[in-house]
Length: 218
Image (cartoon, rainbow, N blue to C red; front, side, top):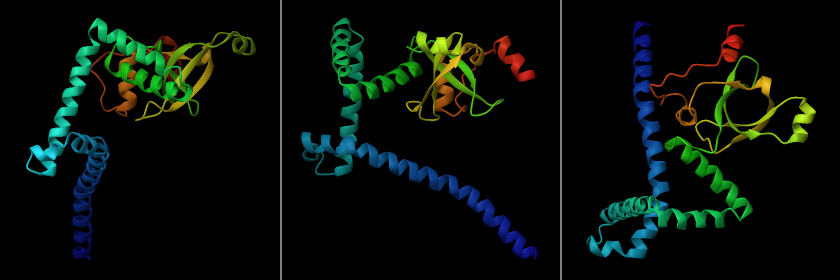
């Protein structure tokens, strides 16, 4: 019995050690295969293999360097007035296409929220969802139309509830003012909490409003 118990404990200990490594390697393999979809066309189009002695992995590494360099150059160009005007016009053209504009604007909004302090979202709030006593981070996108407020009989806010860890997906809820709990938190910090599932929190004080504290204490 003691030998069997020792074997079981050793197996569990080994499983705890191996399982995270296996999952990590699987995720890395998935990411590498996904990135190769962009790297391989660059290698073939630019014929980089002929510059690396037909060593494919070196050609792929060179392609990654070229892609990263191109991104840096584009980023630098967008900081200039000419670049902002050019890419601003491209963004306006994209917004003309219905489905593409929705996807583009959603991803762009999330990206801006993660790296910039000024975003299209007005503020971070807490919403009791999916049940009372459980709070979910929401992003106020604006006030609801007058017909909605007429039905509710009070001010109503458009609140986007982002999914975690993929904030580009979520749901829009129209909430009366008394169901929206304000919280002293920046949009960037709120978005990072969603993306990192709470593990990438910044050392920033976030004090909930008296309304939230009162609700929690009940």
